Image (cartoon, rainbow, N blue to C red; front, top):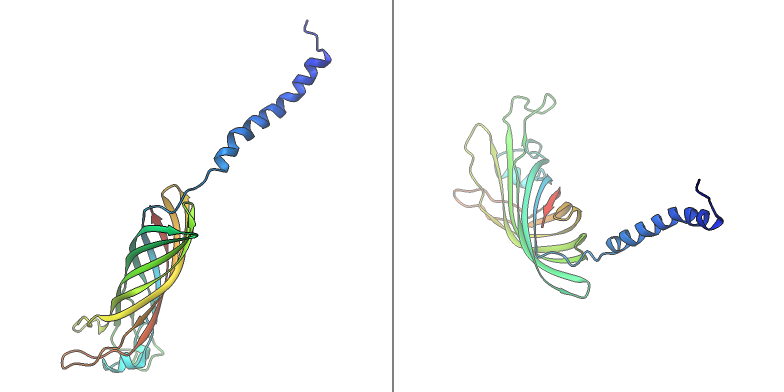
Length: 222
């Protein structure tokens, strides 16, 4: 028959405390582990909500009314960035993104011409960017911008589908990436596109100065 002395009872009472201390010792270094700097590169694949607008001048140059144009649509945003060096709390990066959207609008029963055509607005933008990033390997926010090109083509679906000339376009905005796995992050981006005007030619309609907005949400891989 085993005897439970005061000393053995004391050691038994301490056992749970020892287990907790052991777990704390094992977990603390992992929890306090430095996530490290932002990685060398990242690739973004995101869905976008794009405001393509209903510009009266853009519509009139194509023989349409502004109400016949789609106001917004869903699109795709794909990009990649390389991170060059860090200075104090800022990591500098360069990269580019490509945005695609092609919303259409068909007349409804309350439109002046319910039997009118379906009109598509196709907007594409190629956007080189210089980025200023704030954070570490677990996630970071950023501000970025650059000068690229975009194309805003408006056409009637049952007619010709001419592509508009590309216009110089300043892009600027910001966003963030939060890594839910070592190489996979949830990301979002808000970007404005300041589009330069295009003069009308003998074969192509002109376009006014415009600013369009895209809000993109998706995943990033590093």
